[in-house]
Image (cartoon, rainbow, N blue to C red):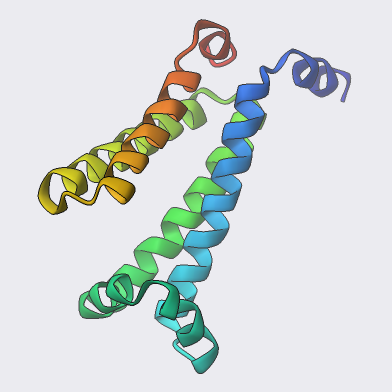
Length: 141
């Protein structure tokens, strides 16, 4: 337990922020996946916030709900791994934000949706920048 406290004191705040973001993303992905796997009027109200996305996910069938739920679980585990200083969790976070940023870049290029595309690229880039700072990297060597 003393080692955990000492490791927590040395952990850069950036790691905690990224882990919290992964926990929040995990919750959203699990709820989204669950709502696709088990449709109900309650979930339909939530989907009114982004009806086009819902229509795309429904066309993909239960695969989309299963993959989103699995991604949510993986993101939550990665968040916990980051807090414990696990190298695999750092790599997972870097891969996740890289893929997300590339997806947002494709969205930007094909749809010219500056708000979603550019903002997504900037946010993913900011997380990648923070994760690759030398002090943060040293936590996962």
